Length: 412
Image 1 (cartoon, helix red, strand yellow):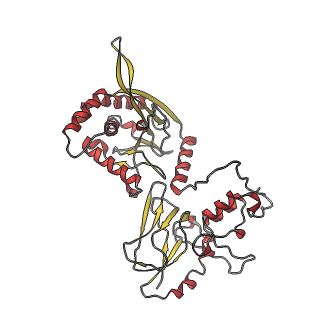
Image 2: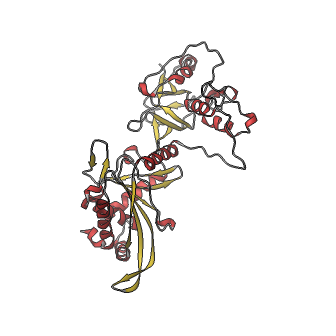
Image 3: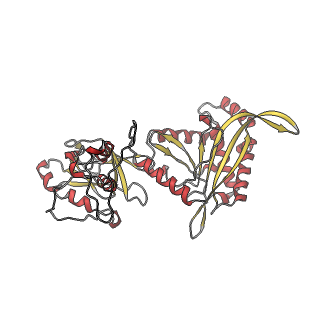
């Protein structure tokens, strides 16, 4: 008996997930545990694994489909030996069902529509329908590039990028007329936003608009840290410490010393975390990911170095597991390797703080009235004023600076 393959919920409270690409094609045999497709969350690419043996009979949602409701049928799996002739009957109602599927009704809730329609049925993904509706685009005139001629997101985007005279325009509703989209002047290239990029944009926009940010900056002299790093690396055989490893260690210890900075805001209460879980921002081609180092204050420099390096490598390869990207009470964003002297980062909700680390460079300093040269690193703390007051933020930065400038304290 054929089985539906439904879009799983791969993140807490998720109602939609994006399908990046299928790794199996129609007609190919499938074994339990094999990877069928790659699903895209706001933070990484996750594998969809087969739960039954069979043959991938029909793909209902094609590659590069964003915002697919959780619970929606995305493919049909034929049982071993089952004839493919049953597919037409099984999927006959799928296009009608997807048009009225409601995420709010739950993952398994699917509506139905009458078989008879006033105009020819258009086979399109939910995202393609929504984009077309928002931009006043008629789907009837488009040619789909998805499975079995289904219209998908890229077809809508290509139509919107075409000259206006060639774009089919949907008839505007009387109460809210919609103008035809206006193409930008000059030459340009449309780079479709993946699910990760769209979610990052939404979350950071919400953070900047709703979280009352304030900023505190401090300059840290790190000559002693650099000397200790050189000495430890000279003794090490199986690891090599970076300046960022010391920064993660200093942040973790400073959060343990100033627990009021290790908190989140809610309308009911300020949540003060019992564990120090530090997120380290990693740049990837698809966007920024923030894997979490759990219990960072309980790990030494060597353990932190190994874990951060492994998380960063897998983050750049889109191989992070969902649990490695969820949670976290504080974030570090280091752009010093790009030559950035200083910057202010946007808070990653529901966290209250993010530390922006700039480049270490030699600068003139005054010591006991005498001019000297020191290696200085500028750090800026972005703070949510609802949960962390200015004095608490300043106390945290003072503790962080003390560890950075007296690095032997990190080894105790």
